[in-house]
Image 1 (cartoon, helix red, strand yellow):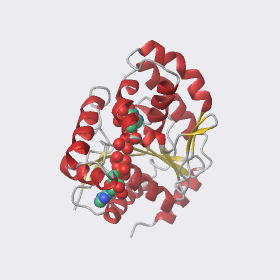
Image 2 (tube, helix red, strand yellow; image 1 turned 90 degrees about the vertical axis):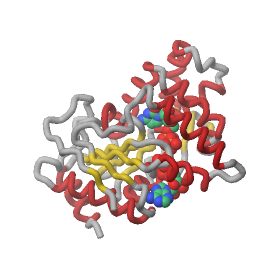
Image 3 (cartoon, protein in one colour; image 1 turned 30 degrees about the horizontal axis):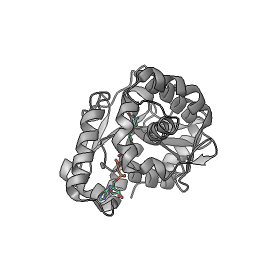
Image 4 (cartoon, protein in one colour; image 1 turned 135 degrees about the vertical axis):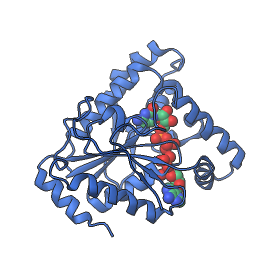
Length: 263
Ligand SMILES: Nc1ncnc2c1ncn2[C@@H]1O[C@H](COP(=O)(O)OP(=O)(O)O)[C@@H](O)[C@H]1O
Ligand SMILES: Nc1ccn([C@@H]2O[C@H](COP(=O)(O)OP(=O)(O)O)[C@@H](O)[C@H]2O)c(=O)n1
C-alpha cells in the first residue's frame, strides 16, 4: 500500500502546496479516483469541469446564445465573481451566487451543451486564471486538479501529472452504470460526441512529455486509486520534485519520461 502519510509529510516539508494535475476523457475515472486519492492524502480536490458546466448553466440561465462567443465572454466577470466550489473531497457543492447548482450541472442537457462554452477562448482564459488562483491559495498541503487541459496548460509544470485513460467501451459502461433510465446506446452517443468535440479544443488523449499514463481499463476502483497514489508518491519523492510549481503555463525543465501504468 502506498505510504500516503509520507507524501503528506513531504508536502508539509516543502512548505508550498503540491499540485497534482490530471486529465482524461469522460468516464476514465478522474473525479472518483482523484477525490478518493485527495481524501487519503489529506489534499484538496478541484473539479475543473464543474466550472465549465456551471458557466454553461449560467449562460443558459442568462438567456445567452451559446454559439455567440462574444456574448459568452461578456458574462465572464460576473460568473467568476459568483462561482464557488468545494475543494474538500468530502463535500460536494457548486454555487453560482446564491444558487446551489451542484445537481443542475450534471444534467444531460448541460453535458450536451458544455462544449459550446468550453470552445470559447475567453472562457478558457478566465477559467484557467480562476483555477490557478484557487490552487495557489489552497490551505491544504496539496491539491489534485482534474480536467482536460490541466497537465498541458493550467498546471503544466506541476510535479505530478497524470493522464487517466480507459478503453471507450469501459468508459461508456461506467457512465451507463451511473445513469438510471438512459440506454447504453444513448450514453455511448453522448460520451463519444462530447469527447470528439472536446478533442478539437484540448488534447486529453496523448500524454505530453513528462505525463504518466494511468490506464484503468483493467483496474477496479481500489486498484486505480492505489496506482494513482503510487504515481504521485514516485513523482513527489525525488529531491527536485517536492516543491510546488509556480502555476505558470511555462513547462518545467524537469520532466519524467512517459510511462504506462496498468496491470
Ligand atoms: N477503475 C474503475 N473501475 C470501476 N469503476 C470505476 C473506476 N474508476 C471509476 N469508476 C466509476 O466509473 C464512473 C465514472 O467515473 P468518473 O470518476 O466520474 O470519471 P470521469 O470523472 O473521468 O468522467 C463512476 O461511477 C466511478 O465510480
Ligand atoms: N479543464 C477542463 C475541464 C472540463 N472541460 C469541459 O467541461 C466539460 C465537462 O467536464 P467534466 O470533467 O465534468 O466531464 P466528465 O469527464 O466528468 O464527464 C468537458 O466535456 C469539457 O467540455 C474543459 O474544457 N476543460
